[in-house]
Image (cartoon, rainbow, N blue to C red; front, side):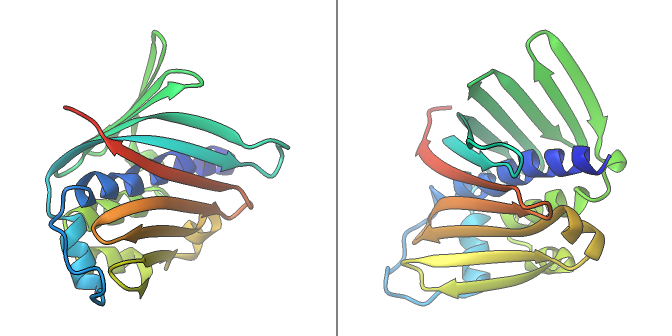
Length: 203
């Protein structure tokens, strides 16, 4: 059960954090040398209500010698619809909408309620809050630390709940200006996933 939760957390925290990039890519540019506050970053990430970008992801598993690589595209529609389409190495679609997760692989489909995965819910809700620019909701679940300037910033999210921290140790988001570059997810078991955001795609 713990392994299943960790696996689900890895896949969906990456997708949800990367959704920030869908919005940041279209935010209004500011002076690169300006300092950046958390409220300003929340505004940048929560300014748009939809997006569509490419992604690549590299996952380093403690029990596997070579890292796992995947790529595909992400689609976001406010306030709570996120679709992660993995195209390589194997097609897979993960759809999150109104508290329900649908997983489709080939002709097989499975529908899960997030109520069955309580340790993942804080991540989903807090990242949703980030997209909405809701700082209070974000800080309800995480210790939030922002460093750097608008030209090069780092946002670190550390779980407040010990049970959640056992599954996902930290989420580290790096970006510059109004563009997000990478999302690193470090799990409690030592596994690390790094998602790199690519170009915006046509609807």
